[in-house]
Image 1 (cartoon, rainbow, N blue to C red):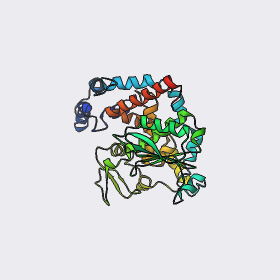
Image 2: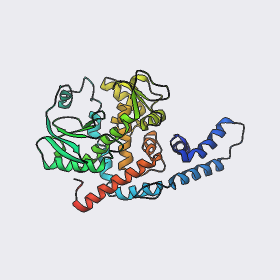
Image 3: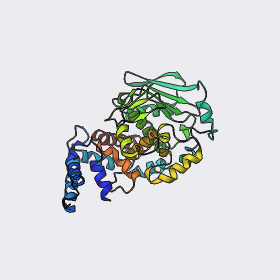
Length: 345
């Protein structure tokens, strides 16, 4: 699909090395009377793609962006099928429509309404290690804390606290640098499912990042503005602002800010736009959409021929060399753990 292929190449200002291809396309649009040589346009696109993947990268893992991409695929190949099944966990995805609505009568929702939820165990970063600071230590808590510390890039995301609490939705608080996991459920999760959850939550910390926004009552029209958290005006070059302009700017304001309040409205929105979302949960809010798409980017093989907007969203992240490298690092770490311990944690 040539339109989508050109979109991946030219859709974002951040992909500086591909601007030559974009300029070619802009010239065609600016002067419709000028004959268009389709073969030349295709060749320009192919050249731009090749130049991008050949771009050197400052990494101990790989020498070019393309090599990082391919190494990531190689490291994850044994586990992609399991990850994909957990990413597409249909039963849990459908319950996401209830979350945040009056229909949500789950114990998780009841706990969210409480002023305080007892902490079963709390780990805090001290001298670059997680240290138990309250609660009871369990072997599975130690294993997951070790995995989180290994996978989360704290140079790009604020992480200071790991809490285990009963009957809570996995979630993060970017302001506090906190990751919260359900202590009574993780013992029942497959390890691949735990990895999927952790990558999703890291996606939130990466894209909902205080370094990327300012709190303001107003925001320029060309920047993503999220009201529910006090008015976060995202910088033009932030991941979520670029993602918003690529995929969300044409949706109505109600959906962008707080979503629809009833399950029926959420389902109707998803059914109308289902080819635009990697999961049902992704359709509930821009924050969830980018985190879900990030999970697919990290834990599924590269797709060089996206056919839907949902697939396009996954490829969005490949325009950032630092994220391509991070994907390779994570998949290598997971493979090494399996090879050495027969376990992710």
